[in-house]
Image 1 (cartoon, rainbow, N blue to C red):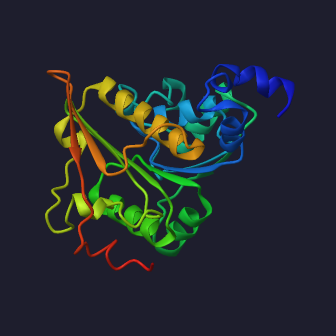
Image 2 (tube, one colour; image 1 turned 90 degrees about the vertical axis):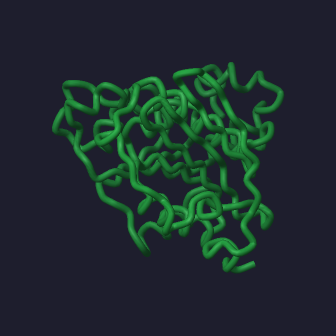
Length: 250
């Protein structure tokens, strides 16, 4: 770590739970962020600022005027530009020292699994159940930790799933495939700060997992009601009959 890095990350390094070792762990890490929208924007901004060495960002959409109310990595000047390219510009503006790989595509099947295998942690910032289940399948197969977040209307949700721990549940333990009802911001609306709150917490949980600081949300789900500003913490046990993680290789 050079002098510029020591100064840039000094406020994190002085934290006993991070220190030089934790900061070096961040610098050495590769993080896959899927979705560069309302959640992916704050996730990427904070992880770039914190010094994650290699951010791999994936999205297949372009910046639209309706995105700008909540997707803070994008600006009016970038309307029409691929979201991953717009986000890459914003992340590099904050921290030019990190490596960013922009994948302007939907990751699926073998390609998704390969990217998950290469990552130290995956952050799910997408907005549909089909993709969430595919990401979860890949993370369970690769035994790669997953930080999952969701935001809609005035409501938010976040959890951490880590298949390296045989007692930890997966996303499919929380939602059965045949019971999930697809909801989107375009159909239901979303208040802008909810995506910022949940996305920032996803970044924090990723940093904790990568550095070993504190206690992650593994085995718990946090639910936020933004209208009343009430938080609920729900214990989530592993489903012994889960069709995804119960059949995963030991």
